[in-house]
Length: 287
Image (cartoon, rainbow, N blue to C red; front, side, top):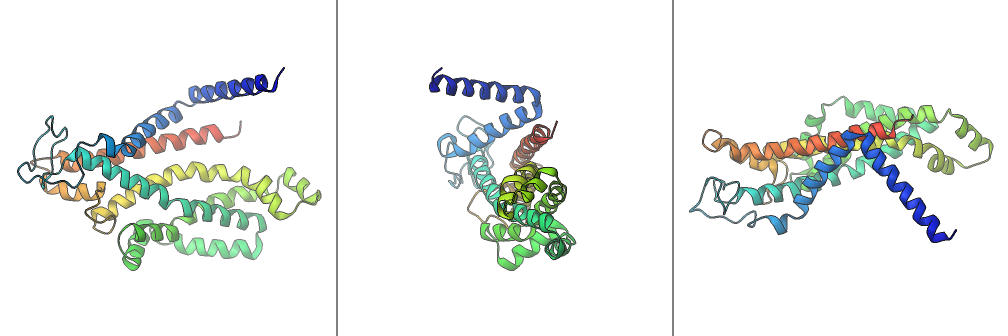
């Protein structure tokens, strides 16, 4: 049997396993499908949006749905569909980038604290306890006030406030894994701590952080939308769902869609990521 045949056979088996996993975990399938549609829509915003998101037409303000404007226009005559797509592009990008540092730093700190214990664990957990004592949104808003509004302030605020949950989650799992037989065997075998952490501990603890990151992106996007609603997040003229809700609330009685559609978009993103998170939890749960 040739190497090419073996490679083809392995690829087919992996495909069968992937399809089997998708059938076994419908929540994961539904979440990935919905998330794929949303992500593709915002990625292709420059192609599928009818107008520039900031293009104004003061002769067609608050216009209803039409062929020219499928979702109507806002109070400045800007196309609502175009703004909705471009705002999603902004919020999803900010939400995804804002969790990268907390995920990496929190996972690393939690692993080290759980593995070494002692003063390392005590120091990390005291810092975690101090940060968790503050309500999350209050802490984020306060940090944005200090470091400044806009995306830069958002990234810094979440870098400071959001890593603690990852640290606690991974630490709890590491405390169990470090007492396992395979870690003890690795120590007896003379492996260094770095090799044990990288090869035996982290692969068995990071799955919890991966599952949580889906919920965390939802939390971050909602926080970004809330900050923008309050005028502390993404700054005009960049389109943002929070700004769209804030601007549209003045016209709820005459044009409810201006504030409702961005809210529905946030709900759909949250639903898709929550389904993916639940599906990953089922998929990664040990049999």
